[in-house]
Image 1 (spheres, rainbow, N blue to C red):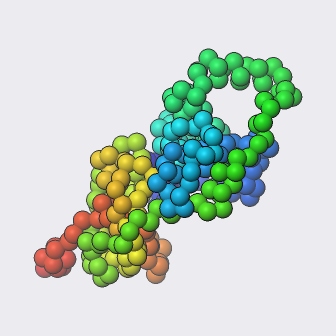
Image 2 (image 1 turned 30 degrees about the horizontal axis):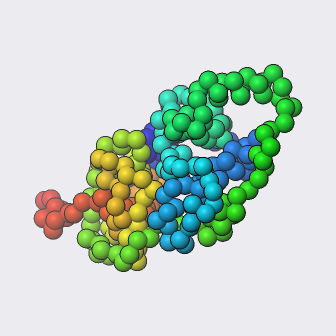
Length: 253
């Protein structure tokens, strides 16, 4: 995760304002609904475990939209813009850019629609805008497990591992504050797990084992760690782990 998505362990950020409402404005509910509909009609569901028949749904949505696409859009933002906009404003920007990029509407059509609603905020939405597709309802109820077959782990519980430092590219699931540090494998997931998209040099794509790795807080944050701190546990994909030899584990004299 890039800086604006990876604030854990950083100091001097000032007070944090926790918004207690899931949706602050009514329009935010609609943005969430659009995202859910795109997820429920995504072409990636053709390989989903529940066995969705997207052709029978009659959808004209023909591309893939997953959580990774939403996250990639947010991570591509200028960090100053990222902190300037509200949560669902970032969603709106990412979804809009995706629809233009994939050809579902043009930039001119988007600008015209924005201008129209700006001049008439009370204008009615197009007919059918509130309809919910049966396929989307089924997806919301059944989802899609990323588990793909049995686990094929290269590491075992108790192994000491070093966290890699791969290029972030468009998207990464590796927290920056863990890069380069060592931890101990606490548990191994029962299956291999796929991520929503290929992250290129980051190493995610095909299904891989997933581990819970334990880190000593003092090793991560040194003297700034709290007194008698609890260990930190992180779920990590196998491409983010590298082996540590017995010689490397041995303390230096």
